[in-house]
Length: 201
Image 1 (tube, rainbow, N blue to C red):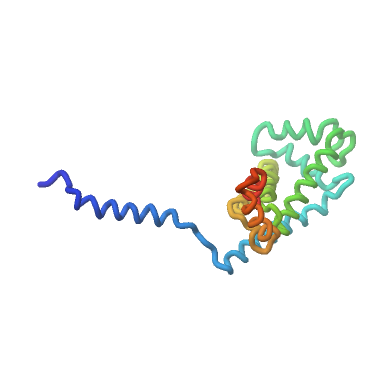
Image 2: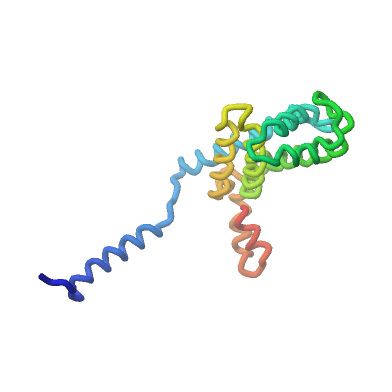
């Protein structure tokens, strides 16, 4: 019975491990069809956000009010309803209209502008990771506030879609980032801001 192995016995194992580690670090590349498909998903998600702007239009953002009321009453995370009641709904005197509210209009304007940024970023592929990150935050907020009032995965899937678009530079196909990214990467060696911005394009 032999307990210790010789150098010759260890060599094939080392070669196998080297092959395994090198194969696991091979970058995954998408075909033309796959890249175009991912870009179309990005555009459709952007259009989804764009479409949602029209039922809560400025200057009053009336359509949003009932959703904020629902979120404050049915939140998944304890304490989130309290935050909504003391920000968006501070001073409100009615469950049906934003009367007496002191902060509703400015905060609703912030939500509307954020959704507009997400829509433009994703539809046109401009700094798509910024749009996707912002979309993830907005979708997660909807998930936390409305998860119990609708099918639980409605907003959960939107969170996952936006996370997916954050993970991949999807604006580099059929988007402005396709033109912007190489220029930012070329300037990244001498410019810190360009190096930082290139990750978002």
